[in-house]
Length: 277
Image (cartoon, rainbow, N blue to C red):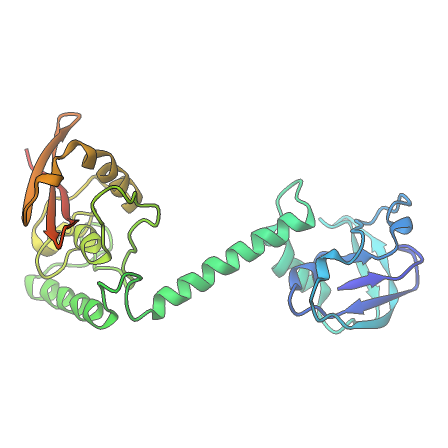
């Protein structure tokens, strides 16, 4: 973090703060703490106050140098004492990738944090021992993937990632916005529908070969399948289920089958697939 205490962008002495919480600000440039300087018409980007540093651990460190105007994307580069990190590298890696035209510094920070959260969530999925609802366990999921791989080898099926696919390393969690007034869609049944399990299923394109099942169109992603299921469920009298059952519903000339089970008064979706003509 480069912070000028006064003197404007042509000042020979500034103050650097090493902010471990907000490296994206380090890569963005100076923060002027003197609001008069900020509004003096200086050509450098100016951010007023220290509101970006609430509860951070920045430590001011004096450095000598100046900004030199150039034809880069930022419009200038720093020449002078090394503040302890590669300013240009930080800008390229921690700021520029998250910057869109017209962004404020707050926009950039929000976007970077969102990307980081997604990365952490993906990492958690890779190491999670069970699905969020507890119906799928890592050990059983990995064992089933190995079984599918062995079966493909025995049958001479080449898992090419297109026509024939191996169930993914990580299961798919059910949509988190699933309506509460519809039958429950648990992770174990949702992944049965998409990728198959020992009982059958595998209706996402590329997975039907595992249990010789029909597949949805190639363009149908898990999100599209969930949306179609969500729209078809109100057309089915699932409340009449006593134990288990499958209903057939026609939409735009295509027949779909939806399976249900009922236990202790709770109705769950067990399967969903397109029927063959």
